Image 1: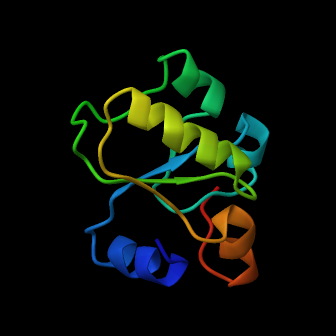
Image 2 (image 1 turned 30 degrees about the vertical axis):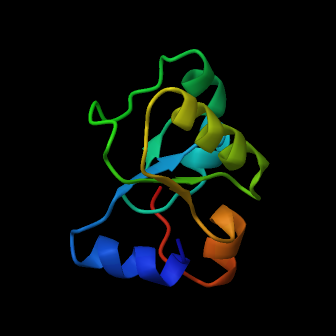
Length: 102
């Protein structure tokens, strides 16, 4: 999903669940508004707090991409069927000057 599309969905209150898989330190330093924190390791161990609806639209991001790709694969294995990645991840989000929540 393109960052500008996600911003518009957030503003219109129609945002998919945004899943930030970075570390706690990274998440606390600034994240996409409304994003839930679910580090990749918590997804792997099935202890992340994720939507119960496995058809819910999820947008996954990390800082640069590898952790998000791993999380996307894990979520697919766990039955989530509508998982996409945020283009550019958090680094791209910040470069674009988009809003960050702390």
